[in-house]
Image 1 (cartoon, rainbow, N blue to C red):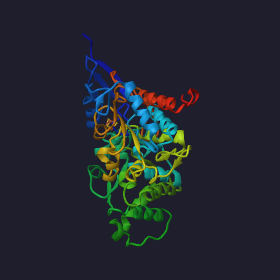
Image 2: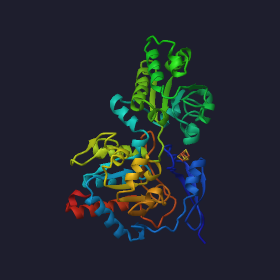
Image 3: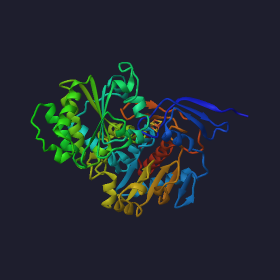
Image 4: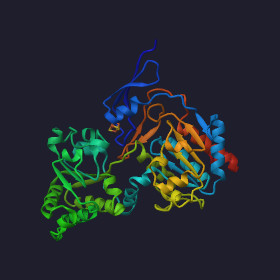
Length: 440
Ligand code: SF4
């Protein structure tokens, strides 16, 4: 009888922390994980609940099909469409993401990732304002002032405090939490806020005003005390905060969707990035987004390498054009532009606005997912694929743009996203008469 296998330093892809110190124990039959040491509650559920199920490898029009039949059906849908759209990609490997971009290019379609519904405004702000940034390793070792703006790491990224920030003991901060000042800015008191030294409860929709007031104070400008009435934060509190920021050794502001997806959006993020830049006149200060999905940062990187833009990219004219609001998937669906949709590792039918979902249900959809989803249930072609990180090797990017290799635990009988997407790409090229030298 075979014995349980152990995988050391496995990588958890459940959230953007991408913890790479997980100790996995695989059951003797090699079909499930029985222990995920070092993982948080969310990571444990991700590993332990993943089992090899008995789903068909592919469905076409709800009937079981071979991979070859489903690949042919998917390629024909994409080639015959006038405005095919590709979406998702934040929970798959960079290798699969690269194939998805190539498909969008060959069919003159649209490519977009889940970034457009989370940190898309941050991507726009980076382009407009630039960023002072650092790896999470550098932040862990040096940051003695840590601010979270519009995020709740204790519940959304449970090991962010312990591995990279508030509680991490490190080279230049040997006492961990005691050596750092932690500030939380949010519209409500979350579990993370309870762990902070300072909590600023801003009025909803007033983040931009608070950030601009902080910028003014950092630059020694006058700020009227009516700021409290508008934002909920007293002028003295902001002045105290600015002194702490200017006098730390190394400061960081982590920002979440509570900043990027509220009133002001990319203006909010631009203001925060500019604040970090201003503070560099006094000390070392950086700003980093806190990302949700396991490889959403990889999706930004891969789409940027291939097209020059991070998300919301359109190839209708044969070259890439970037226009959030026009080429983002929610918009191409809600306006009724897209006439076919390829979805990789995402479930837009469960979380898009109603008008976008209604249109999605009226067009041919192709899905790749390890498990049935609301979107796969309405798909014309649905592939069951192996899970990245658990069954599939490859590369993912942590939220600070550090690339990490996956260490899968056991094999799956299902193909991976990369294999299916490459096969669709090759069939698309055959149908369009594109020569092999263009396909690799
Ligand atoms: S913090 Fe995120 S990446 Fe780390 S173990 Fe938990 S779910 Fe996984």
